[in-house]
Image 1 (cartoon, one colour):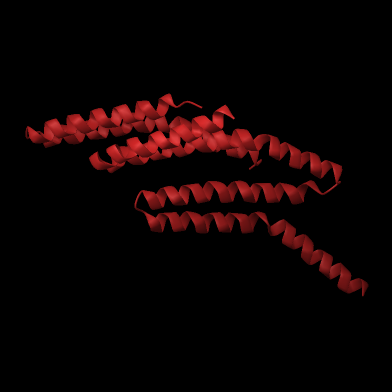
Image 2 (cartoon, each protein chain N blue to C red; image 1 turned 135 degrees about the vertical axis):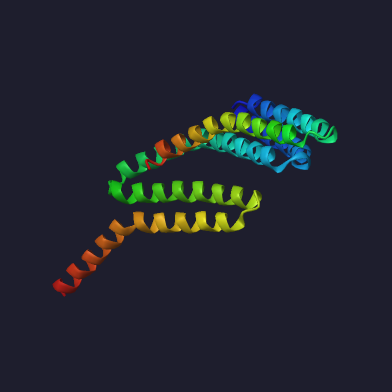
Length: 131
Length: 64
C-alpha cells in the first residue's frame, strides 16, 4: 500500500511542478511527464504481478490451453503500452503520431490472434466435414 | 518507487529555464539554445533508463 500512496504523491508533485516547467519549455516538461508515467506504470506492474501469476494458476487448474491465455495476456500488454504511448504523443502535441501508435497496437494484436483464428477455421472445417 | 528522479528532473528543468532566461535577456541566444539542448540530453539520459525498465517489465510480465 505504501507504493500506492507514494505513486499518488508523485502524481500530485508532477502535476504541480509540471505547470511550472510547462511555462518555461515544453521539451523538459514532456520528458518529466514520461518519467512520471514510467514510474507510475512500474508501480502498477508491481501490483499486477501477483494477479498474472494467479491467472496462470487458474489456467493450470482449469486445464486450459496455455496458448489461449498467453495470447490474451500479450494483447493486454500490447494494448496497455500502446495506449500509454499514444496518450504521451497526444500530450506532446502529436495526435497523429498517437493515432499511428494505436493503429500499430491494433495491428500487432490482430497478428498475435492469427493462430487462434486459424485454429477456429480448422475446427469449423472439421465440423463441416463431420456433418 | 524513486520519487527522487522526479525532483531531479524538475530541478534540472528549473535550472535550465532560469539560465535560458538570463542568457536570452543578455542577448546570448545561441548559448541559451545550447544550455536548453544540454539540459534536454541530461534529462533524456535520466528518463531513458526508466523507459527501458518499464519496457523490460512489461515484456517480462506479459511474456512478449
